[in-house]
Image 1: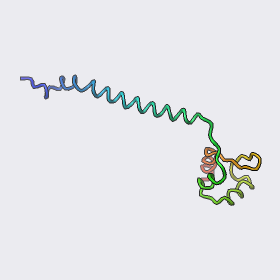
Image 2: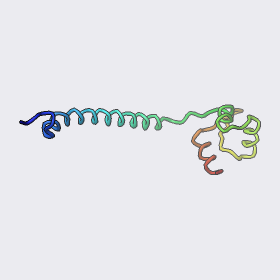
Image 3: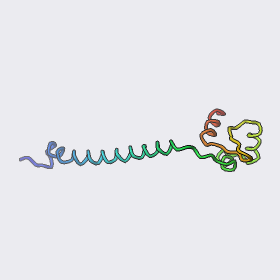
Image 4: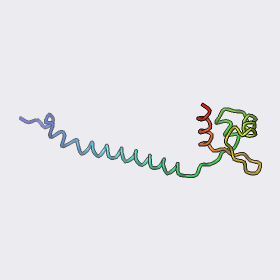
Length: 97
């Protein structure tokens, strides 16, 4: 007798479409997440102010002003405000290591 629960061909025929659908759904979700991340990274980077940059780097606000005054750190000045870009700060940190 041929028991359907022990026949590999019948089991494969039954489970293969189910497994393929599950894998396809997971791959689709993963691809959509990656595409969403790429779209977000194409947006222009938002500058941060000195307090946020100091917190990110673990420096005091006065030390940040010293680094800016000596042109030791990348920053942008508009009027009386200092702006920093996270990507530039990360590159600066990598260059110091």
